[in-house]
Image (cartoon, rainbow over all chains, first blue to last red; front, top):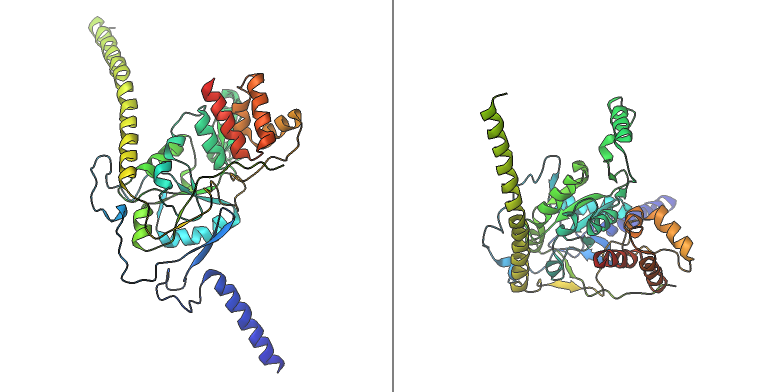
Length: 249
Length: 131
């Protein structure tokens, strides 16, 4: 009796744990992966379920059904956007949501201009338009964007201090890979950028601008498929509304 | 040193400078063209079908530490507010100290109405851009 009870308890715990990630898909015919039916993500204080459209006759009929746009500027982007930057797919995004996003150590960034973002975006993502990374290190908009991703503005670091840091780095006594003259990226988030799809240059622009500021390439991922692939796979899209200012006293 | 070589080198430097000087407005113009083409394409693309409408526009997931729904403690004095900016938001503080005394007061008054760091940051950037 005791053994039966323990087995039932164990099974119940396993089912509950698996249910959080939809590993046991009791009702969905169209799953995310062979082991994952859906994944929940926090978005603006709510929980949004990312799953696939279950209607197997559904086809795209909006702007993302277009096959061709003028190139330039809407040119096919290479798989490797920059050395050291990892190109990812949807399964990697699910893993990123489950790990880095849930732990607070990562951000998914919609790098498109607001007019694109407002039409629909990936749940859990943050809109930081690529233009905000394009300024120099003293540009207010760029500083604001860098702060959002966890970069810390260093004070005035003279050449003596910087030379000393580099010397210590060669001796293995200082990690120079996370700091520049202007920025400390030690506690910066792991970033996953995307835009409209393989024909969109907005997130590549953002990534290259960020690398130009000295951000470590190994902390950047590039979802080349973007909204195009996300939609073709029937994945959940959210449309944000205008945010209202809140006085919190 | 060969006189002809020196002259040729100076001419090359001058030409390079002229090319850069001439290219800069073209680079800016090209960026503007790109943005306007992006906006044009966005306008011709309707809203994404099968999308779920949320209540407000999130700027950061709630489970991140550097998020747009992060707030500065309410009810701080002006000095306390400045101290928090300096200790916790170095990027914003870097911009804030470039404001005049009057503008800093505006930022403080704005914080008293809306203490989200995203809002404070926007006010700082707006005042800096206007200055």
